[in-house]
Image 1: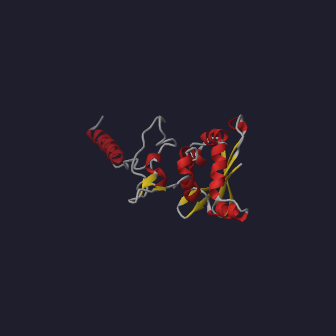
Image 2: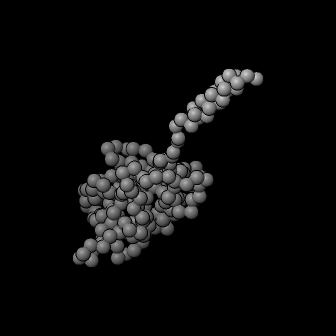
Image 3: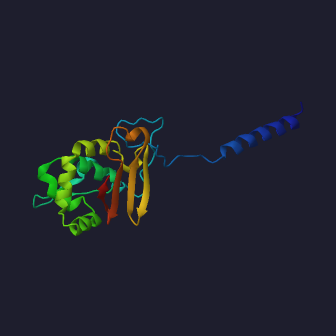
Length: 193
């Protein structure tokens, strides 16, 4: 082997090394596993980076969605259907909270319909409370709201939606559909059937 051929081979090897050193470095700056943030969920890879735009309003912990006002009254925040369901499960069975549910969790359309039938909204809350064994069993089947596996979530009109359980999830429950409305920034109950 001559010196010039050895020199050519060294130059070629050096060029190959330099070309590899110039390859772009890849860094993952954002990744969210599908079940990220669910209590008890374990994923094979960890989440990377902040949520875009900071925390989403729907990330509000459920235990922080019933706010106490300075006057001692309670304000219910329902930035997601999951929050609405949690409030229904917590407050409908409580006799002391029926006016709170009627005033803050029922949709404007529901209130208007009930009043057109000469029924006070609080009466609908009392019906839900009287049937809460069945209502609670139904609501517990969709604890993640529209993200609950097996729940069919579809629009029914402008800012109006229905969540419906079927198949094995519907066995043993009286109610199958939760009708909801997005009013301003809060989800409200339209009807349960």
